[in-house]
Length: 402
Length: 77
Image 1 (tube, each protein chain N blue to C red):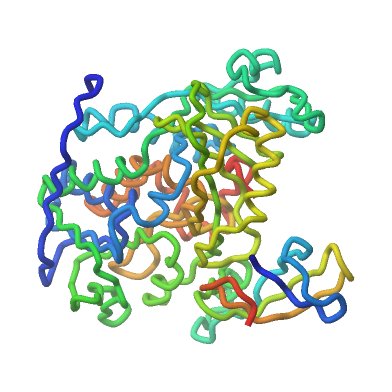
Image 2: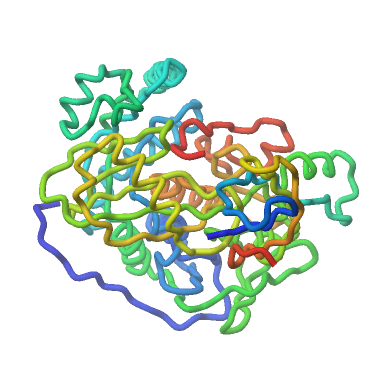
């Protein structure tokens, strides 16, 4: 894109029809991306995306907008790298600027154990064709001059892994861009339409019951964030998911450039700068499952303290906003995509704290699965049946959370 | 923020506790034993509403407490 003529979004809203080929529940990034790729790549435009509030009102608008692929198992590295690649060209494809900016990610290690884990990550990433390499504390300091290498005297930096391909983007705009792209191909996006149940014919799912009446569908995809267990229970599907809130906060304008994304899996916080100059700081999710979006002062206290250990300049900034999102944390910390064992009902869920980066790949692959009926190779390992097959995709160490 | 009343220590903040998980069972409608095992090992009810669950008073009396909590509001009921 050129730098950067702002174009007005053209969102074309529709009245709901009685029947669609595909109904997607959840108007977040994954739902809208799936709708877009169904229409744009596979010519299936008789699609409705049903959203209970407004598009991007859930976790797509609440995450810390980091895009990276430095995961710890080969299947995940390949999947997320595909997503990182799609993000690079997505602004051109959708004709919509969403402030995508490649920044590089520094992943700090404070102990020998963490250093070993990061070395292993670098080797595995390299084997999968993803650039991640170890850097010394001095190199980390060169990349991020604000970094206190003594970690406030308590958490000295022994080294770090560096993932140059990592990026950030404006998350709402990604949602709007996909919505616009999908609508241009004739997809219906129904806002303020709550799904209250699923229509069943025997075991098969044949549509959705909504606040504006029943809508029948050939295929129903749940791209719900947060209430997915309730949704799956309508189809008698059991999920290995617990829903935890995760909080983040943003400061006022730093006034200087803060180049890379800084992340720390031992202190459990990650820091990046938005296009407005604000510093976004996120951390681990709350330990108890809950659907509450209440932000807490104790989180702010502990997370701010950790961030200041690493970046003393944060001391002088003010906190503008703090918010929470509810994350579907799967039992093995990997997403769950594909068929559920119930005819006509698919899920893309378990996106926990790692969903935003996967929006393009998740949407593209789910669309391919719906359109062709065959599970694409990238998606195969992430099916719900992996738990019964004893092939859990355990990768907690790469999620940046605990 | 969540506060939990411990039978021995009284009302204490959630930071002192460890979450021990909800009390859960395998639904009756699953009859196949292998499927029941998978469900027992992996699946959660993940209730949006009132759950019964165990908490461990880690930084206090180090005893377990069972309580009912509303996950919609994250408050003990």
